[in-house]
Image (cartoon, rainbow, N blue to C red):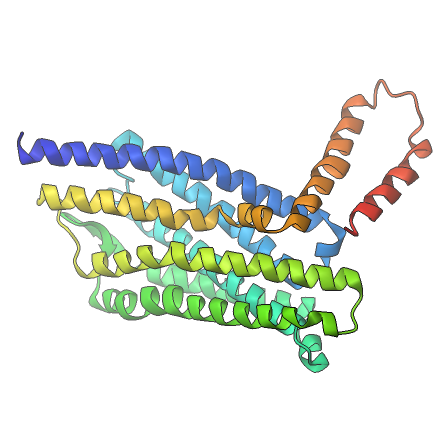
Length: 339
């Protein structure tokens, strides 16, 4: 068997692997992030909670990234490449959107851990320092910075005849190699998220000693546990991909070296599939490790969404006036929201 046929087989397998894993992760990601948005916007306790606000932004960013990823996967399955090596505009746009979503997601995780550290701190002055209004300002400033940064960096990508869509100038390569991947989306968010999540976990272990309402104590414990598990998954899913990206930027493989190119594509497909789990896993982590979150999801889906859908579908045949059963239903939902 010739090396060209072997490399073609590897490329075909990498394409099929990307297609199937991409579709599976996309399905779980859309469902999970959609349910996150539903729970964190519909549940009364989360509407004024800063961590819930950050998780909501993260979920929106995750959804956008999921749609970008599935677009690239479908293009690869149809044309045997993601079209970034043929269209300069798509080459730049792909990295602009991808980097915007990645930075937004990673630093929303950091904001969540920092906020949880302050909100569970035993010092009253530190607890009062962070407010929802301040959190919105920080989130707005971060998103503006991320968009400007991603546009500036994305414009440095261009199409090279044998290498495809790669950074086209020396400064961009050096920046990506020594700051963007190892620091900005590597060490810095990992260090911030890990440190503050552990500090928040330490704070919440002493929360019983503080004179706080029981609902507030339960909410702090719940979110701290959810955030800690999210950070652990974030670190382990991010590190392999970041290491590989630093390597490929410094040592790009030419298409003319067919076997090496095919093996590189297979490794990239595997590590990318691991990496994009980061954008789909948060809801399922919350569901697995928080029994209280499971009850809250059930309340939102059954007591709110299902009841509303049932009312809309059956309103024509329903002869009972709405005023006769609205108040008990609302009171039941309010009591369920205090779980």
